[in-house]
Amino acid sequence: MNVVFLSPHFPSNYFHFCVNLRKLGANVLGIADEKYENLSQPLREALTEYYRVSDLHDYDQLVRAMGYFTHKYGKIDRFESHTEYWLATDARIRTDFNIPGIKNDTIDEIKHKSLMKQKFIEAGVEVAPGRVVRSLAEAEAFIREVGYPVVAKPDSGVGAAGTHKITTPAELTDLFGDGNSGEYFLEGFVQGKLYTFDGLVDSNGKPVFYTSHTYSAGIMETVNDDQDIYYYSLRKLPPNLEKAGLATLKAFGIRERFFHFEFFLTARKKVVGLEVNMRPPGGFTMDMFNFANDINLYYEWANIVMNGTTALDYQRKYHCAYIGRKFNKNYVHSHEEIIGKYGRYIVQHEAVSGVFSAALGNYGYLVRSPGLSEVMEMVEFIHQKE
Image (tube, rainbow, N blue to C red):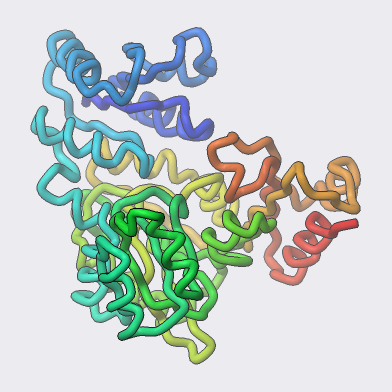
């Protein structure tokens, strides 16, 4: 199989996808804007060939790269990046080169929040009221129906970028600016705890792995209020969350993909659908999957690509948590103290790329333990402020 991977060097842990594809016999062909000599040694060894472009946003350059690979290696069987940012580009390339996967005719329902909401409804999952508005007047009309507060976000956007909680008419006016124009997706505010439903489906759409994580706060609040963040995997999923996640998965009918769904669980234990993402969760969550279950999902995905499915037997052995720290905060305990006290629980720690630091902090620790109390003890120790 000929598999083209877009931007295989970023995020930094995604080279593992290429390494495992190569182990299973694929021709792994990379396209990116980074100099070849700057790629990690394991990635260089995994790539059959690398095509450097000067600008990944220049679609003509990507087409030329694909034309070169096709001429040299034959039909391209898969094209993938696994990142939210490149989803539309992935779909366009697959459409133009007739490659299996999400294409132009289905990309909108996984990029536009207004269309995601309809899919949640099809799945029988409760949602907050929402509407696309294009003017201050339309926004005011919506708020007269649902009341304050509301959440305003781009209908098509990445992560928490451009997302705001609006609590007053003055904040609403500020959002639309002096011209009182723009386009936002407005939703009624839901008070609840953020949970995910994450996993991987095979080429028949069968889930071969799924799990859930819960967060210290929503990503919107973490970014906008400059908060510390932590989140951890569950060992046992709430039954209604599992039911909603599987129903949502069925409604979208995806194949051979990772998925990352977001829900609120309210104080009354109601599950409310928030967003869907048809790619692995961000940050270091791929590694958290593996550490929490003693598995290798980079390999399992590659096996699905090459063979259609995979025989994965897993148990949720540990709670695995990500705990982030920011350089602009004064913490009581040093990095050396953290390693000295909790080193036996810390499975990975490293600096966070600047593009992710607003949400994840500047340095992150992955910790795991069978008991949640140990995880929360580490969160408190690592985040303790002076």
